[in-house]
Image 1 (cartoon, one colour):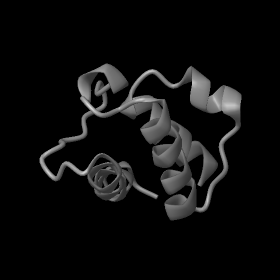
Image 2 (spheres, helix red, strand yellow; image 1 turned 60 degrees about the horizontal axis):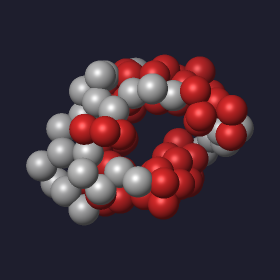
Image 3 (cartoon, helix red, strand yellow; image 1 turned 90 degrees about the vertical axis):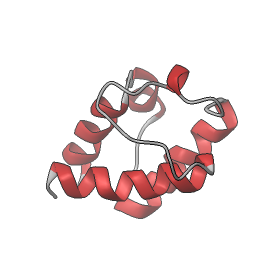
Length: 79
């Protein structure tokens, strides 16, 4: 799957999880940059991404992610 396709699909997931259609994904976007990104929404986000992309992440993989760019790379690696 191409990076642009991943970002497009991921954008829809972020918009749904955070209920913010104005949220623009970029590689350096971090949890601190999104007002409603707390531990509960993080779990919802990860589960939604796993479902949408048909992948599974380990707790250590998710724990090491620092930004959206790293999340995209992990999705590419797993899919």
